[in-house]
Image (cartoon, rainbow, N blue to C red; front, side, top):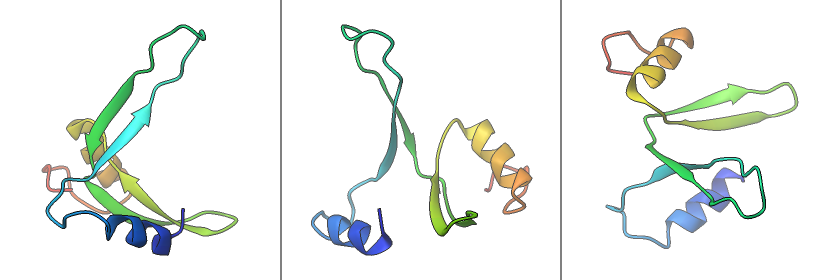
Length: 81
């Protein structure tokens, strides 16, 4: 998805509406229930992919996001991200 497409989509909603990151869990069998993990978006960073520049929306368990932030050099390990 391109930023312009995302901006267009988001423009259709109230500005105070919360945005979450929803990850659909893999389904093993056709009759398995679909599960979705929901996370707040904690970090938005550009990422230089080999083929193109992309924008990452990062969310997850707080400790994992903090560790990611420190590993990427975009925050500290004090939980501030």
